[in-house]
Amino acid sequence: MDFSHRRKNILTGEWIQVSPHRTKRPWQGKVENVQLVQEADYDSRCYLCPGNTRAGGHQNPAYEGVFVFDNDFAALQMNAPNQALNQDDLLLAKSEKGICRVVCFSEKHNLSLAQLDLIDIQNLVQTWRSQYEELGAMSYINYVQIFENKGEIMGCSNPHPHGQIWAQESLPQEVVKEQKQQEAYWDKTGRSLLLDYVALEIQKQERVLFENDLFVVLVPFWAVWPFETMIAPKIQCHSLSDLDEIGVRAFAQAIQWISQTYDLLFNCSFPYSSGIHLAPTDGLDHMSWQMHMHFYPPLLRSASVKKFMVGYEMMGNPQRDFTPEYAAKTLRELRIGK
Image (cartoon, rainbow, N blue to C red; front, side, top):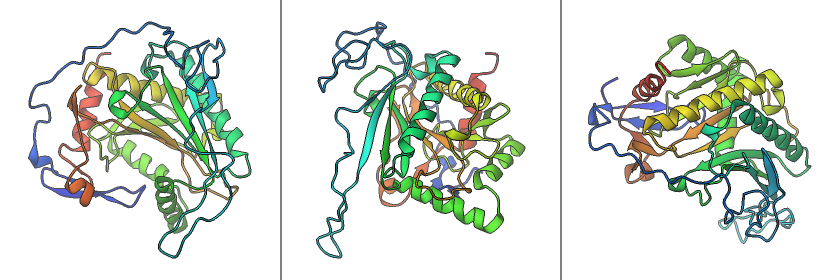
């Protein structure tokens, strides 16, 4: 479609404006390469490196591989009082209990997720799975959000490879929207929204980037960010708990493929925010849920040109110029011959 149009995000029910006529060639203008700083595999000043003292005063063990600890400056508190804080019908608030953890992907300071060996990514997925199960089993934890902010441009203050886990009483707003859409489709058809969507994408092969026996990496039809992607299962899979070791490896392969491909795009350590959406842990039946992983990278035309959400996008709804199909073609061609 070469004309202005809107696309619906079937996972949230929201719409995005697409304006491909505004720029037929999204690579116009200067393409810059960011000069990468060569980091050592250990930094004595890094509060995430093995053996170092963190900002909160705790000392890290001499760990190897994945290391998890409670965030010293957590956004959620385990001891928050259980009470409503409403002042009247228009001033509504409530306490929110939760746990925040940091997950170091490796003991090596100078690696990123894209540079980890497949076995190391598998170990990371296994850790995510065990954390989801451990935190989700707590009586007051109803949702577990696993995510990573990569790069300074995404607000990451420490280059050591790491992500976070926030587990809390309430379902976050994005999860509420996705749950509503998935449940509505399940109630109407008796089938999984994402399973049907993935099957359609595999059939069309317009936005699919990579697939193995169990997972697919694709650019969503409704993608907002220029090179946004999603990893989704090809079989019914509510959460990480549904993955056996074969599934863990397949998921790790998909993560490795897209993270490495991103780094090829502008010859830089590609920044993004990523997160895994999993079935809530509130003890209810969530048959409609399919786990999936979002990647939201901000880069638009080069390693230093960022897409901003401003103006109409803040006041109306998100907008993009070049189409998700163009983004998919660009990302696929990066791996041809590699």
